[in-house]
Length: 227
Image (cartoon, rainbow, N blue to C red; front, side, top):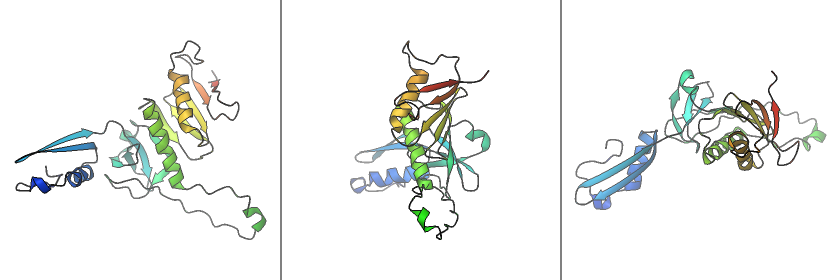
């Protein structure tokens, strides 16, 4: 009740349900969704669904935070708590606030040498921290879509041309660049968790899965761990 801002005596005919729901989600970051129903003359029903899945990410001063796959900051976390969640590596947040949308912290780029004008045209496009954050969020959403929740130890977007996922303790998965990410995550899930008898991986296998499609198009390359 307090989080919604509803007071005894409020006019329910002109009551703003969307505004009250927004206040609840801001005040209670662990809330995923809010449904508010009004029953005249004097009853307000509030249904709340709490978050099931969150991920850990650092801010610019190395503090861990929990965040949803749509980029909403949930709460602070200590090092031990952060270890219980899939961690996002390769990007940090700028002054995160619980209940608000995550903003990527942009590292200060080194000054560009403008004297080498001939080489400027060949420079690769600038990759921003926001690019890395949005890529990480997309991968988390795709894993949720494939029902891979809590299986990955981390998602590393340090290099958007060489994205990596540590799947539990068994597999380092190389996703390559940002192209076909949903398809690549589906291939990862199928290769590791597929029930097909022709599946190349067994329950005891571990090693590197290359799903970058740079070696061979549309093929998962498995390199077993050295014993």
